[in-house]
Image (cartoon, rainbow, N blue to C red):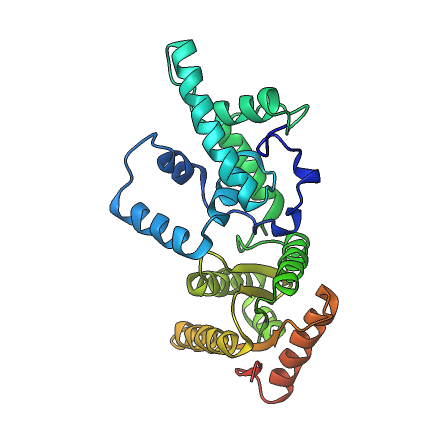
Length: 289
């Protein structure tokens, strides 16, 4: 059995699972040569290659299959799939497309994916998005974020890499809801989420942790770097709402991963820093020093 045909669950470097993909299907198809990329897409690809390295192959396969493959195996599989696509094109007299070639190779040639049904791409992408994202803010929901935190923490501790968690909470949100109504409160939640998202790198993970609370996971970032990120978000939120009736501000807590941490202990430390910010007068960042 070749390395690319090795079942994913028996691959020795399974612990190297890359974080879930931030690469959309249109970009994956463009990277496979289905169309010419525009300048903005090329810049995005160059940035992803620089940040993710071989992990980008895991990202692309995750987009196509919603299955995690270790980066080295994913790199080999990507070459195998593109080669299989060329062979299918010769046999069929037409290009079957990347998605079909990947499905056929992983199901019928390598046997890595069994009993997989096909679904129209637009519906698949919609279902995948709805399943893991909060409907109001578009950020990852709490369950998905918790799993990604667990996976990233295990990877960071195993390889001795820095990882920082930020917890954030909208100040006096109950008063805002009571004064202006829940519809306006939802607008504020969505706009705060947009601000957080704009500050995130492609490798960062942002989620709605519940109610008016958000969480951001920063791989390859020290607590000091996390504190700088949190302060930028805080300033942006305060500035954004300064000329509105809501006058919304954000309190944030920062905690870095430590040896022996699990997701619960890391979250508790970030929460403790958040409550320190709340008790210290709100609209501030605590922890991460």
